[in-house]
Amino acid sequence: MNLDIICFDCDSTLSKIEGIDELATRVGLGPQMAKLTDAAMNGEVPLEAVYGQRLALIKPDADSIGWLAQRYIAELVTGTEAVFAQLAAQGKPVHIISGGLRPAILPLARHLGVPDSHVHAVDIYFHDDGSYRDYEQASPLARNGGKADICAQLRSNGASLAMIGDGKTDMEAKQAGAYTIGFGGVVERALVKEVADVYVAGESLLGVLAYVL
Image 1 (cartoon, rainbow, N blue to C red):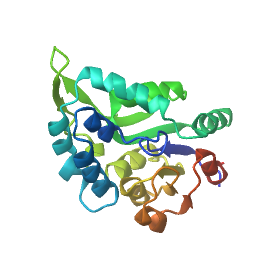
Image 2 (image 1 turned 120 degrees about the vertical axis):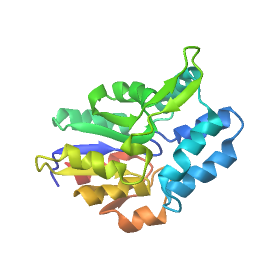
Image 3 (image 1 turned 90 degrees about the horizontal axis):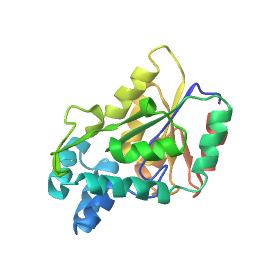
């Protein structure tokens, strides 16, 4: 299938980690937060029900966001750099659409050659001393259906688009006419396997190329 625009989730798709869980572990809240994250990704609770709650508990500061940015790159999924190089060689526009925190994802995107304008994620705000203040509460990506909204904007001219990811929120892109590719290389979710147009189970992201080029 020859698609016009290729979109990727970030956490457990491009990188092996879940950013919010990493931040939680750093402040001793790991197991508690992982349960909330998993419930949202499996579709057991709405994302908006846990998004602000998680950040209010963790209160990530500016230093922790810089630390997380390094973790994202250090934990890249096998084959990710090769996939992005191949898509760039083919002239394919690539976007990252994530419910993660934008300042932590931008360095990963730059590492992969993705322009900042193609990174759709949730902003975070700090006080002057770098302590946590708030997050971008109006962002569609902090609620269910947000990835479908972004995909709808990207294909407003009728472009064909693929959304690749590991969670329920990624599969919601179907509502916007996206071709959905479930990626189970980091986490396998039965719901994603069932709903995705196609499912890639191997550990390497290279397995998605056959479906987008």
